[in-house]
Amino acid sequence: MEWIPISGGRVPAGEWHPAQEVATLWWAATPLTVAGVPVTGLTLPHAAQLAHQLGARMPTSAEWEWMASSAARRFPWGDDAPSREHANLRGLGPGHPTPVRTHPAGRTPDGLWDVSGNVWEWTTAPWRRDRVALLRGGSYHSLAQYAECAHANDVPPGIASLGIGLRPVRDTDPAPPTRGDTP
Image 1 (cartoon, rainbow, N blue to C red):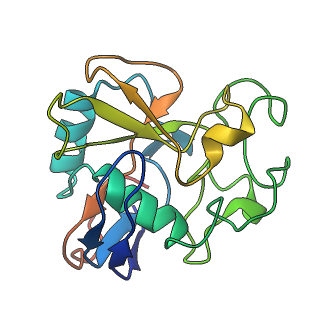
Image 2: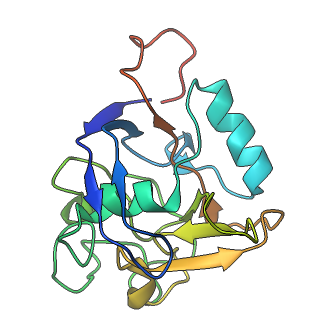
Image 3: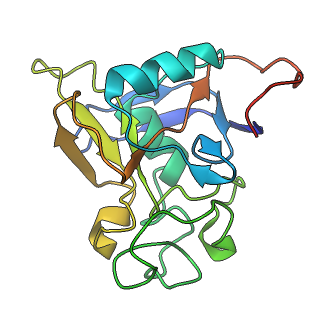
């Protein structure tokens, strides 16, 4: 798995989180994959367990939003409306998850792939009293508005779907790759 550092900063308050500082974090360059296709069908507890096995964790919703937008972009790639070159969204793709790295115009300026579209990404919302989980980024079945960096979908943590995956994050510089690391 390739890890990319994203500098921290102050994420402004949004519908889904209070204003807060986000630390510099190491993000997986793509959602977790097997044979190049996002791993899906994960409940939040299962996704958290997989992240832990990778020496990582689940991102918070505010961390995800900062990574996707740096508080300035409407979509992870910029302000242009999504096209087939940007993301796998409803009407722009085949109607199922596709291999990551298929949409080069949709990369973030920092080099992360598939941040919007293809599969939703689990995040946590520790400041919420109801402890509901938040999905970020939209999926292959989502309308373009769900691919916006500020959008989140609140769901019960036990839900699983072909359209939900995981992008783990690390708080510190990852160790050099070893045999058996997930591609």
